[in-house]
Length: 195
Image 1 (cartoon, rainbow, N blue to C red):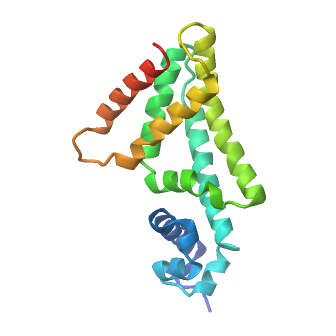
Image 2 (cartoon, helix red, strand yellow; image 1 turned 30 degrees about the vertical axis):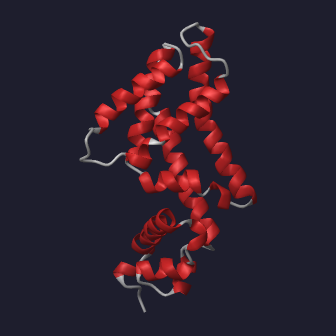
Image 3 (cartoon, rainbow, N blue to C red; image 1 turned 90 degrees about the vertical axis):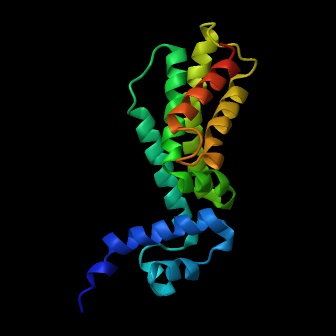
């Protein structure tokens, strides 16, 4: 018997990931069962295993895809030789990219603790790769005397935490537009590095 069109891997696989992402973001990875994901998609729990070996693999794949897209999107930007321009570019990119993917961002930052062994190591390496891009910009600026930083690594963590924090409160249609938030945050980042 042929598969029904709406049960094909091209349709059901993405629906499973989308449902899992919503549920993990809303309730937390540990609180969500494969049965809940199946119910959300409208399939039997056993059918999930045609698309993913287990819940851990589902979490890893979501985080990996999010970080791979983040790294590729950032790499596609034109490189700025000037550290101040590069820092502004990073600031605005980070806010825009993450705002469009709030559930994926929440999972990538909050559910890292639930990854096991090699899954954790691979995702952590991807996160460090992204952080290294900001660190390099800050270090270039410090060496050129453009930025005043007592500790470049600490500044890297602080800036990323501040920028990622926009996702916890920003809502489209609120008091400030995203463009205005970017402007304000860029001013705060600029001042935080001693410009």
